[in-house]
Length: 387
Ligand SMILES: [Mg+2]
Image (cartoon, rainbow, N blue to C red):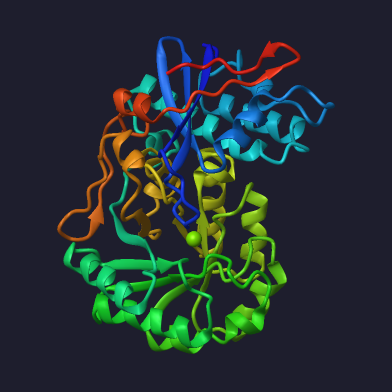
């Protein structure tokens, strides 16, 4: 069969706020082929991704992503890999191409799984999907008191691990210490604590170093993204002085970026299937991480569709036992799918046996939050998908 249609659907909350919450809008990708349908999601600016899909050709290495997708054969994983190769070689001057490819790749895996009646992790070769310890992923409160209250709530919900990040973190070493200690106080001594600096120190190793003592004192299990994804030497320098493992990788746009982080002493590689090039690329990183005894953790902060996509590459690998679980996605992100990934009484999430990504879209909710997009160039309409 061949890819017959690709619809790009922009959904958003009525008001998108300048906070570290990536669930306020989304670009959904719906593919159809041979009577089957699959859904994916890009983790990036929806309109920038749409542009990458439809933009007119600039030159031979700057083609629209859509050129590699529509009409392409899609009978098995090798066909998805062929689309990936084509986008990487024919669209590499188009910086949003990996994000756009990610949504397409995820949708194609979902479609193949639905056609085969098998979960995506099984198509990837896994014999079974191992339950994962869900870490509640939350933003710091605006004060230590608010942070402690959020942490208490997380503990009362039965989570065995929690991550706090963004918000006021990075203000000063004393403020950051108070935030981290408040998170620990609220979680109590048993719940595992992770801290996400949200790249706030950019490349400043000394600023990040000044935060380490508080992390040790609060028994933080990993320190995530003190620096931007490309700040490789900063990661290596901080790793040499830090007793807490460094985590990074959610900004990786291809497996090579993740590999570079691993080479520069990042010990927890965090991959977002909606950015890295899809499930195909995420699986490549997971394999590499396993070979190097590096921990692989999914990154996601948005819908259950995205959560499922981000988990597929690690589902069948038992030692990758910790997963990011968005605590309070936006109303839109919650509404547009069903919720098949509930956290059980043991603080674990289990994988549904349903085919594909195992997530059903709520068509009425998608329509409710859909923002129509029309791009016209020289009188020619470049967009035209409808849900
Ligand atoms: Mg993060």
